[in-house]
Image 1: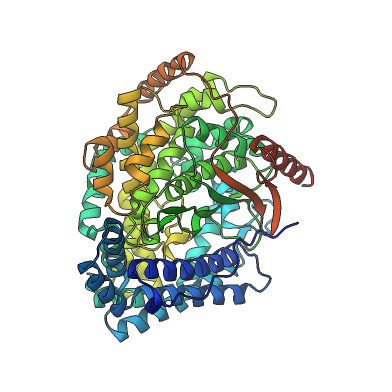
Image 2 (image 1 turned 90 degrees about the vertical axis):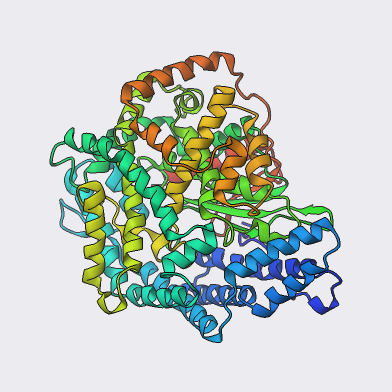
Length: 627
């Protein structure tokens, strides 16, 4: 099979002294370094190299090289000087973007630069220790230890048939916390805090969010505090309706949705996930501006245990011509396992939303179309979480949720799912927020008090304050907290949900429906996607909705009763009679390659989208039959 490694090696760096326009020299130099780093990232995180340590070391090297380029004070000074004499509008826009990007990364002191490079080494070492961990659970029946990825443990926690099995999975996830705390995480937190304070932040968390979101730690947690205040009553009501056993951390999620996972599973066959994603996005008017998409959807040993999207080649307009993006995204579905089809669909919509966002950026430099600072992590998540929210809508399920044989889901099943989800909506928001508050608390521990015991005590205190019990998802089992790029990031998902609620309200108030609404894609491209990172999250939300970022819409949605949600769902399903289904050929304006590691499974390069989906479905079914 052809290799799925991605791009050719990056070209030799451009000699900027020979360039007439500094902004283009910056763009071409950055593009080459970005490609090298992101290719190394994909190889390391996807387990594509037999020598995992060597792959990790290559990624660390490329990341340090790119970081060093971004952190150069001389490069920032050159960009500022060039802006003063810029002639064209494109040149001014590009240089303003480069100045904003370089300011978000530049480290003036040699001591700071050296510390930043050391932190990258520490992060790489911790990642390799975490990846090599013997992770699993103790089978409650046999008493034997069973190897299992964090993905499998999470799925067991959500849908395991017995409380004993769910507890075993939860304890398996808990073991990640002890492992990372004794394999470098504490030292990494201290080093990150030193860097954050050196660069003007209260601590690492505050410095990171200022450069990524353009907001202080206090501003972000003021929004989260408002959400916690407005969801407290509903959360307490949910807890009061549950038995003591259901409130156990390993049973809480199952008590809310475990039975629905089983009931919904037949209507989300994994083999149909790609086809369903393509049709639904095409019906929304979403296109990918000529991008190449690489999809790696199945869990395997050595693969990063969480879905993600990254852009080896950023989209940008070079001398008037758009250079299309290359975008990779991944899921960790386990064919044949309960809930795998739902997980794959959620990842396709979520990461496919990220891909649509970054593929449609049309700005005169690649600094506008990369996912790191000064790109708002929360705003990037608005795109993905808005689109994956459609999967939970009654009208979307009525139109798209079918069994492998074509049987449509019945409304009583939709209703049970809506009631189960609404019952725990406020609690789930608080569980997400607990991870944010826990990470903040870790970085606020004084260095001389930073011990494993203190970290765990702070985490458990946050969980019990916000949830009334230990969390079902142990904070340090969340990979974001360990990663350099995703640390001090998890609040972005909560802020994004605020933006999603406002975005949904805008389209529903204007158009009365989301499913198969062909106005959504063009509108998102205009207001959210095309400008890249030239605006901040509150500005983007206001550009579409006319309102600034707020927790109010999200809190209102979480406070709705089950009866209210079901009544709205009935109306939306009845409205489908007046909404024409998408019947045309799926044309997303992109090349798609579906892979499993280095194996190419299917592509639309030599076939139609429908034929590609048929090949993928046949591969999945053969995999399931093989056990």
